[in-house]
Image (cartoon, rainbow, N blue to C red; front, top):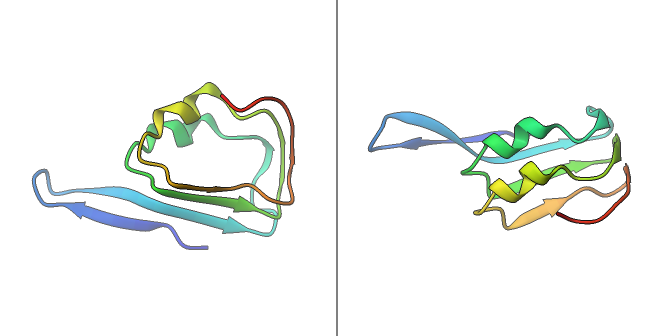
Length: 79
């Protein structure tokens, strides 16, 4: 598990740049709260029990370059 935080020198706030969780730490629907992490570039939630479709909030992640959701039970279209 490796959340990576970056310090924004203009605001002195930490921003989440990468988030990785393996082996079943998340269950149920994909958390909509990830849509608020607008600086996120890498999101890995593999080997879990996520189900359902990706929420529209995933579209807020304009800087996202890597999305790995392998070995879950996701279904439905990509937003």
